[in-house]
Image 1 (cartoon, rainbow, N blue to C red):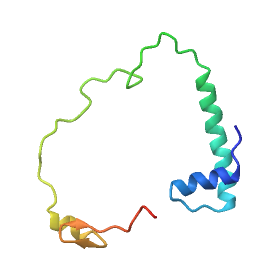
Image 2: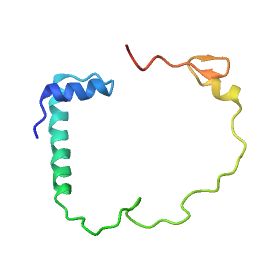
Image 3: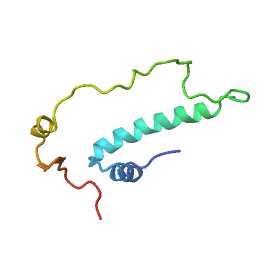
Image 4: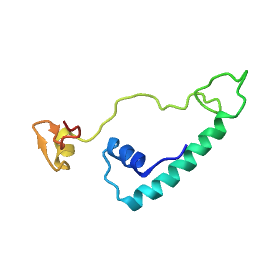
Length: 96
């Protein structure tokens, strides 16, 4: 499956990225390598392999969920370029 520069520009647009034609060419080559690798993975016989969440068994890997002292809301909002009462203000992400 070959990716065209138009495909790469469309993917970048969906990800809200602006890329140059030179960057699109580089990304097209990199994405082609990823797709080739995925095609290789599709050839692996997984018949009889149990589905799993992790490649190795992990037990008790999460820290205990306990409340602890942290920064105050005022201290955290001081770092924001823009805030409104108790919230960070960010520019709109989704367009029309």
